[in-house]
Amino acid sequence: MPLTRSFKETVQLRVQQDPAFAAALLAESVDAFLGGDIETGKAVLRDYINATIGFEKLGTVTGTPPKSLMRMFGPSGNPNARNLFGVLGELQRQSGVHLRAQSGREPAL
Image (cartoon, rainbow, N blue to C red; front, top):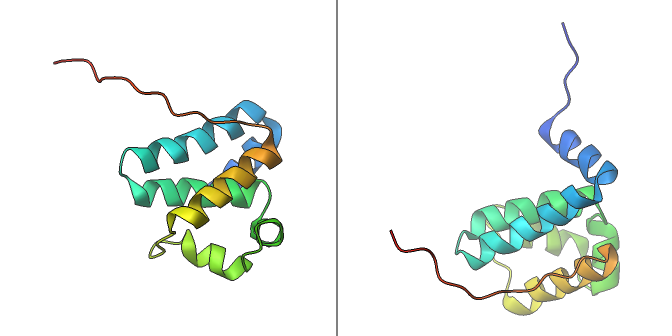
């Protein structure tokens, strides 16, 4: 029987080996938030945090208890704007990735 990795382990390994993938994962989370898909945004951001800085260090640098951050980005969590943008700002600083919002119109059908 072949050995397999969990999805979480696969994501963590890929993030550690591929900076472009890590940046895309962070951008995907923000895109989901901006598109109104809060659940996906939280799930992707949680995967990104686990694969990079971790909740312990993120808690230290943001001044927010790690358990609060875990709850905030958990399935029933509800991060307020101050906490969400504080976390996103710190993740950008830690990673060197700087995200920008760009306006545009969706193509007409």
